[in-house]
Length: 470
Image (cartoon, rainbow, N blue to C red; front, side, top):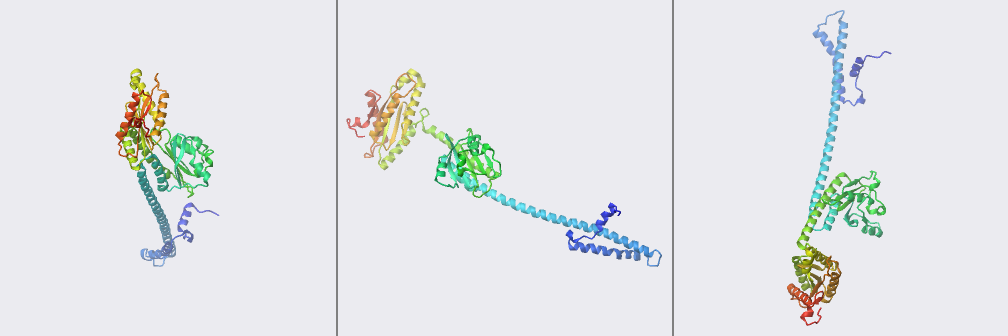
């Protein structure tokens, strides 16, 4: 069987009557049929009216046939082209309609995501401002954990602070303990700031953020190593790690770890960016607190010895006297003066003298409780205030300090000693002033100088003829 030429095949496709399987709308079918039906009558009209062939003729039937077929064919081709074009336009309209609906859906989703982002950034801004108002380092970590838990809707948040021994947990949110043993293990947990501890240690050591999704392959470098991998509370498949980075510090000051373990959802890169913002705010706050602490130290301590300067010591001693008068408890003051200190400066130079002063400052700090107030009173004179301490107890403390000074290595070829005067505030005589108490200690000290130095004199001994009232 012979095949038709390509041109005829193409025309045949144009002329074919559309099948219902092509989803052509009903009006297009009707238009197709109407155009085909109009072809034959129009041909007759042309013959009768235009060509004026109504008279009998031997060619009349032939002409009728050719004109009729030609007109019908022309209208059929026109109808096919028209319907095909309308079909294409209909499909285009449908495609545009679908595209518009898809764009509207995407726009709605984008608006929704934008609202979520705006709400999150507002929370971050508000909670970040609270972090920035912190006045203590532990307050910064508390607010950082709270902000990450609330603003980012993270299930579990742990803040590790870097200390000399390693990373220790200082704040946690959303941690569920299985038993007391696990709770104890978490409280005593110390993680090295190195790859030995996996991702947490790497984040600390390299001072960089990390994110892992549940389907990610975690390289051995980032996996928790024994014994840390046995602690369920810090294990996770999808988690974030953001360092609290301080300029000039090699390692991270702290690490924030977070996940969505209970929601069984992965953390995202947006979560990491938000967590890093909070960590940076915390870092800026910690840097400010560090500067403020240094300024406070410069303003309140003696630069050479590292203990309180005279102005600060006097202010704190006045406050202690006020509390002692109100709550009726005793306190004692030890005053000491380095024996023959001028000889040290004159014979071995001021550097040797500075070394002696520094050593005595260290001895006073080492032999004082946290509540005690050691200070440099002026020149080679030092004072120590001992709250809740009666005179006789202060004498034993003074003796311990005297022996420590006498046996200390001062890098000078003589034995350095000091003379002490001790006085105390008796709550039974609440009208005493700080100047009066200091004056008693000063008189006792110089009584010791006159008696031969390197000794301790109690103020009540010289004021009552030797009777111990301490």
